[in-house]
Amino acid sequence: MNLSTSLASFFQAEILKELQKARLEVENVKRQMLQQEISFNIQQTEALTRYAEMNKNENLNSKPQL
Image (cartoon, rainbow, N blue to C red; front, side, top):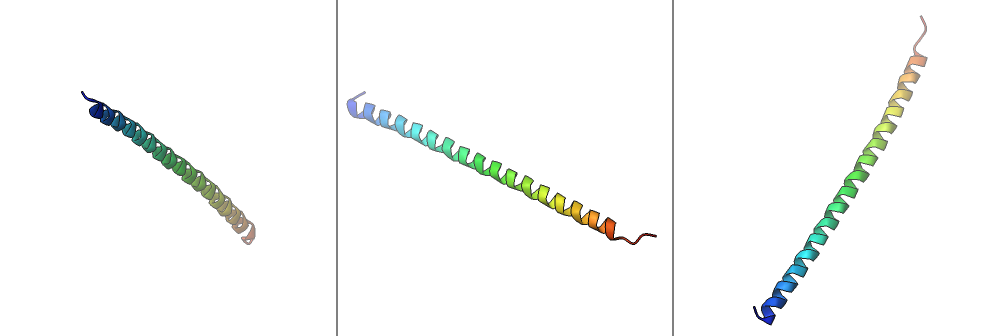
């Protein structure tokens, strides 16, 4: 194996390491985005539940008494 082949192999290994690092970073960003989306959806669900409960209670209170 000559020097140029050794250098090529070294740089190829370094490029592969950097590529793997970049892939991990992308996966971490995707995971964070999904966690934020889940958190947002939970907040929306809680808000809608409160709204529905409030309307349900208002409707029960506004029904005429027999």
